[in-house]
Length: 481
Image 1 (cartoon, rainbow, N blue to C red):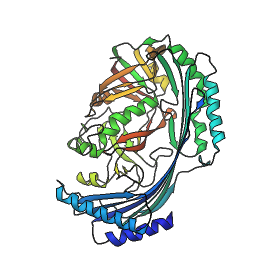
Image 2 (image 1 turned 90 degrees about the vertical axis):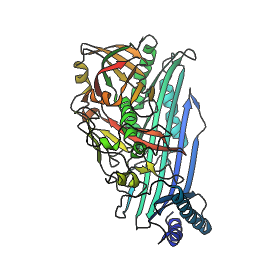
Image 3 (image 1 turned 180 degrees about the horizontal axis):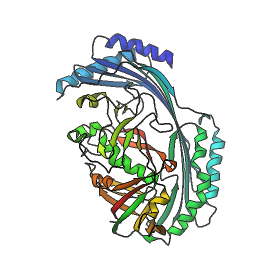
Image 4 (image 1 turned 135 degrees about the vertical axis):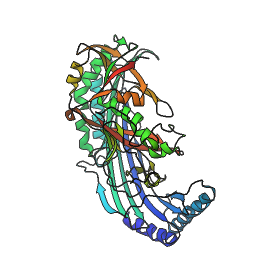
């Protein structure tokens, strides 16, 4: 791909040098593979390879962007000239001239550490693993519906800028999960998933599948599915709650990650998932959460779906605080959005493959762990509920008010777990909810959860994000409404 990149680059430079304020070129190849089963039947294997290049220019304060999957000199020239023409046309109608945060041009390379290339493992071996999980799920005759999957992705990308940036990265992701259920009718069904509803996704090689401990946990979730048939409905009341790490991950994603995307704050991203209450006049003022809550963005954390060394604008990845001891102190940003508040970019500009312009996206968001283990949190609750797994979520367009639901829960009485509760839900206002947090879990129980399907933008783009959390406790929350 290097020779191809050099050829595109020579044309790109010939037609952009001296004609714009800024320009960058990306060449990317994305390989994917997904294997799945449903109730012991193998589903069609999904495999794809996509490669293309994109040119982005900033000319007279306006962006121009074009991409193509055709590779010849005439196409390189056409695409580059079209990007310049789009910028010129955009300049005529834009309401505000774009300024970007200036970074010294970066050079470097990064490759996800991989011991076993997932694409080199034979299909029979992978299907055999799924069939083994299916057999374990059906060990109890009561189970009537099952599913399993393995998912692999490798993105090879090169970035060059007119200013001298030269970056290469190879990012490899693996994912897996299982679900077992009892379906009695269209409305009456009981399901448990592991590691969580959409599985677990991390960066790394095939060897990472074993750390999910799926085989070891299948008997437990099957036992829970059977018990769920006679579990109590979620009561409607106000009580203390503890969220499992995977459900806490979703809570962080929806009520901290999305509200702190700076393009959403400015309203330039509002058609998909709304705007945000966390406006820039509240930076360093808003008491977003209680003193025990600190959250930062960090693409350098090992193993995340958003682990990389440079974002798609060539900005080096780094840890950036978003909430410190409950106070809003930062945003997820790009070169353009960061310049608007005169702060450095948080290296959060990312594109979905080669055919899309970079947007502000979540990275690896980390809720800093505390010092309480799960058992200690339960012991300090008189009347409450422990909620586990991800079942449902809903949040308003301003990211203020939400309702989230778990797959399963247990009541907590006098410091001990009690009876099982099916489909528990809880709701609240984002700022009030996070200010009611009085304990974040111990580092030993902390996990970085991958989200492979975060949608944003128009045209829509998918992004891979991660949220790290242990168990989290909140006081006096409305449940079951």
